[in-house]
Length: 243
Image 1 (cartoon, helix red, strand yellow):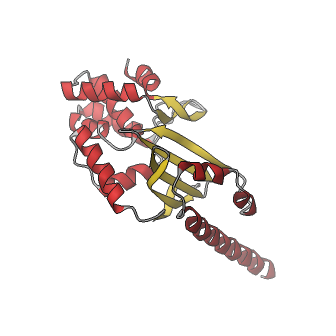
Image 2 (tube, helix red, strand yellow):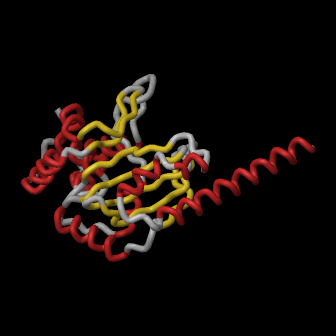
Image 3 (cartoon, one colour):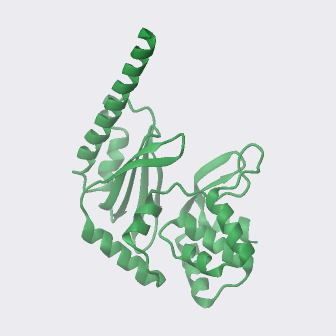
């Protein structure tokens, strides 16, 4: 019984420390104004003092209208997702991440940014003639979407989003594929483009959107066999899966 109680005590202490680190980090980055400050955080003494073993950018990638989407991972239990422009922080969230289940457990805004969020959504909806909401934005920015049709050791694993895209194609569900083409998430946009191109039923509006995505050519989270990558460009994936 003594061993069991000691083990439980250690778990409680570790959980409390993780909570403390999350709150401390949230307070620290809430003062940040620039991408450079986030860059410096990765190699900072603060991270070493937190005993963080693995701190890195999953991606720093262009999206639309001069904005950039950024994601920092800290030991697979904290994720920092933020949108920047011209090197300045626009808005973002810090989250506790369950690496075992690949799910967000808790999320807080880095700092209040209601007007900047509304402006971003307005620009996106104007560009794509869409009607996306703040809820859509938050969901898609935080999501761990992956483009992948033959992943893992066996080559049989298909990501959840890719599997759904295949169902849309099978049903000739152009409406949902178009919604993905105009999404906030570059991964969903990629899958929407692949699905529409596989169907061969692309209207002029969709053709122009895909042309714009090729010009932007941002990096996409994807898997091929045993390789998981965050730096494969849009045009490469389109060529692989739509031809």
